[in-house]
Length: 293
Image 1 (cartoon, rainbow, N blue to C red):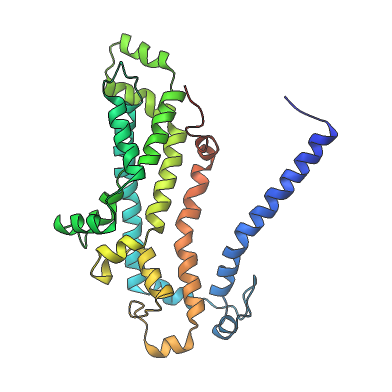
Image 2 (image 1 turned 60 degrees about the horizontal axis):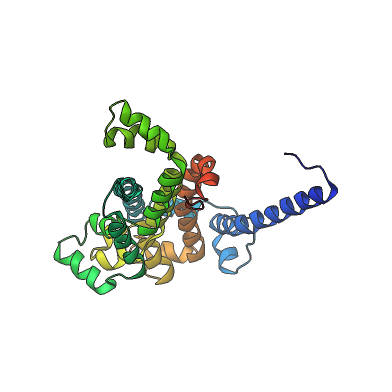
């Protein structure tokens, strides 16, 4: 239905105006970081750069890309995102499918569901988790960053609700009549229909793994195993430049702000590149669990 009243036109103009302002406020910090990374050391150190580079130079990117420690951390983060997302989505989808059934179809479903809900409210805490990871010998391995976060109970419940509300029961019943089993129904009916939900939860999982830095700091005893977020935390927050692999003379000629800005901008690029491919599913996916049977 198309509204053409004066009030609706005013509302539309105000709505677009608000969204434009919000978009500008979101993009300006990124533009500022880019401008600082492309500016000369004196302008950046003097806090003179706003949104246009001053004394344009690519020295910060040259030193960042040429830094073996940075590139290694970048590759480790990419591997973590890919492996972590595949493991998490595989486990959550396999758990959400049976839990989306009725009590008659899956006896004891509520017990298992409340088991997951309980983990959302209470957890063992940092120290017990650290002890388990170390006792299993996972320190300084990729699995220390992936397995403790393999299942997010909140995301799993969102998938569960999507299965219950968005997959027609008649399709499942027709598949059973045609001789399909649960595995075939899961792969050929549930997964194709649930693409928006899977894309949205995958995006949430990817962003979590990409931004997570604390687990890398406590589970990795060797700095060469730091993921990118942990690497940036040590360089930018702790001001520890031992991992930068840059000599003292170069550090004097370069501004810390330009190098840090270049690293931050490069670290933000992968998620900015991935998001446009998932955007068409995101609008539908953000209403996950909004409906109830």
